[in-house]
Amino acid sequence: GGSTSSSKPSRGNNAASASDAGVEAFARRKVDPGVELCWIPYSSVLSVANSKHKKILEVRENSFNSRGAVAALDDDVRLTLAILGEMQLGAKSRWYGYLQSLPRSPMLLPTGWSDGLLQWLRGTELDPNDIKEERRGLKRCFEQMMPVLRKMGLLSKSTSTAEVGRLRRDFLMARGWVSSRAFATPAARHGSALTPL
Image (tube, rainbow, N blue to C red; front, side, top):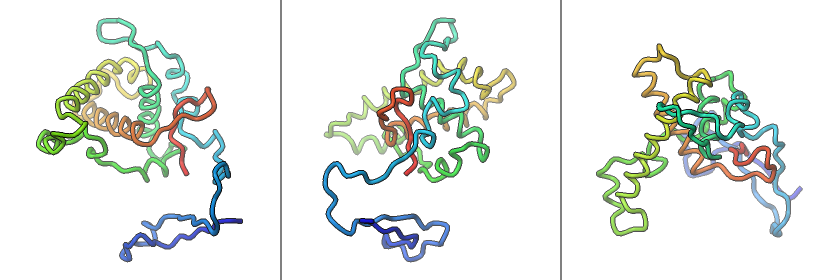
């Protein structure tokens, strides 16, 4: 083969323990465009089609907001909800190890930054006021998805305010992963997905 792999930490962090070590692959020769570097079966991708809640989430217009109006589920929201459902399964999820490997910081996207940090964006293409509006939009999206979350079994009438807050934080984390890591698969059935590599 044209590559080799290693499980030793080599990113300048000599203090990393064995559990922190990753897997690296190095090319032994120039890799030409179009050369397949890896193959991942669709059964391994975290997509709506592979999620526990696919029957609920595959229907694109199946949610109702608090006033009973239909709220369409776009692909990003559907994938976010699929990931959220897998997160709530914990160690029972097929993707538990993969999900545990993802960063868990509200800093992942600017929508999770404090207003003070957003000020550092002044004068850039990312306007702090636009980010704040996007943050409000994500809050509205979560509230509109509450009926779907109930249908998924993630919320009930007895869910405490603290549990709803935790679920909202997990929703925002999943949304951050979708924004920063999901990409369109060639298979229409799977659409956008998180793909462990």
